[in-house]
Length: 151
Image 1 (cartoon, rainbow, N blue to C red):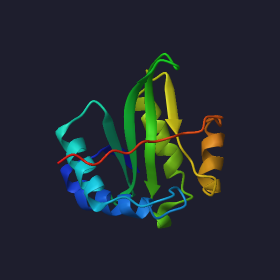
Image 2 (cartoon, rainbow, N blue to C red; image 1 turned 120 degrees about the vertical axis):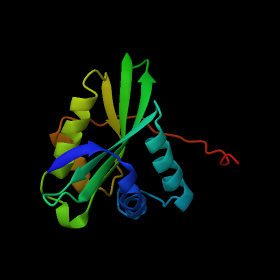
Image 3 (spheres, one colour; image 1 turned 90 degrees about the vertical axis):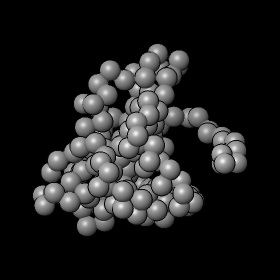
Image 4 (tube, one colour; image 1 turned 135 degrees about the vertical axis):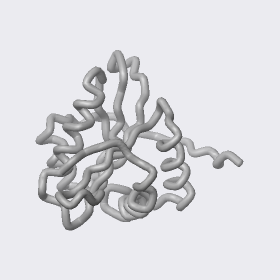
């Protein structure tokens, strides 16, 4: 298995798996098609705010992705790497790909002060993996304010 940065050839895989991700217990809602498309274009053209790693199976086919959001955290005292989305194809689950992709994030962003993610209460299997990898629960309640999309 190989883990690499996202490439132009990953467009269909990324967009398809994004929509699949938002239909899993990892999420409470779906997203509009154009969100995944805009994210993909942003990733390809470079941004200091986001990154995406792709895991390939033994045949060199993409089988998982990890979308990252990069922010500064005064609380943590440095770079905070948000593991926004981790999606492993159904037939590849249970093979350690999630652990390996998170290890690749640690390796790539080894100067980060904090790694952070969200997990729904219903995503028990993912929560167990994250605890096993050293993530701790926060007592924060998150809030959002969505704004209309630009143009």
